[in-house]
Length: 262
Image (spheres, rainbow, N blue to C red):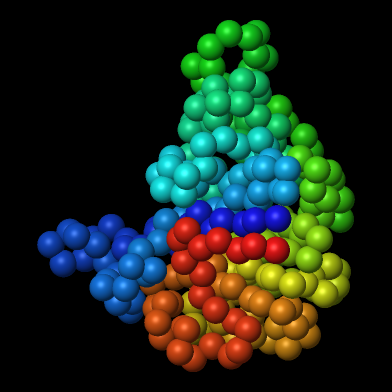
């Protein structure tokens, strides 16, 4: 299995809009380090049979896929309905054309409800012909379910995202947990015995209302002890080189375009 981190940034990306002369606000990160340039958080999971699962359609999804040479998607998973994870949904129409069919998509009932409100046209019956709009083939899942998607056993994990719940994913010994602030005992148990954990760590400082900070993640790692941990959903205070120099062994910051082979 291969995983490509399409984007590892927070909801505003990096640089954020603004900054000197309007050319971007880099926060506390070094603008000369290319791995500090971050699009919104999303990944692609590719099986040995070359089937690809896209996790979330960020506002940057077109550039993410073309930058990484990913020309086809076979299925889609949504972790939750916040704009930085769904706003690129219109790009699915091109994925439909490449696939030649409605795109199988998986998420929980609450997220489907939000998507129906904002993108109702993606759920209208498809009568064949040209894909002039996105067309989804929706499948409803729930935390605790293990669902075979494109030949991969995807386990869905309940996560506390502060104001809402989100879905984490475990596939064999890999897990992807973005957009969370707390994990309960059930979720922690589901994340034991991993080779690779990709997990939200938005800030190095005080606890954030909706995202895990670095201290919280390191506490979880004391229990979980994955062989490798990669941080994602990195905020403007999370400088790549500073993190790489100070994180404990086995923990590293992610970056856009990073490829993980399992």
